[in-house]
Image 1 (cartoon, rainbow, N blue to C red):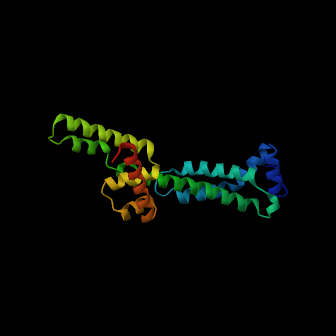
Image 2: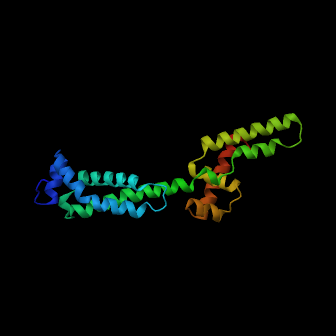
Length: 190
């Protein structure tokens, strides 16, 4: 291993393209990467090895963004970058899980229940066209939040349940639902 007087010297050499310095720095932070990845891989949706890779990306970012003039030790800065990177991935994954399509009632089910009425064929076709227009509006005009809130509301979730599932307050649920209704009405008429 190369002999550097301090981490600042090793960082400067790594940024200048010295592969030995880069390897030295990565090896020095690797135990922290492994510990942080292990502690955050608990629910099994993200593997430990994936989190280690994300931690290594955080370590490389730390090397290239480190500013020795701030008076912070590189090891402290690198560990913070590694932790932030791993926690960000875990948070993003949690957000995706909360937005799982399994929680929604597919609009096709609504369409079949509407079209299953015993009315005349013209009204059935008209209702099916309306449902298609609503689905198209939901997919193209609503923001992700508005769509998620609307679909959870259609699935008979209360404002409180929706706020818990999406990690927002009930006022934001009401506002998103109101905006969604306005956009749908504007698109297809009341």
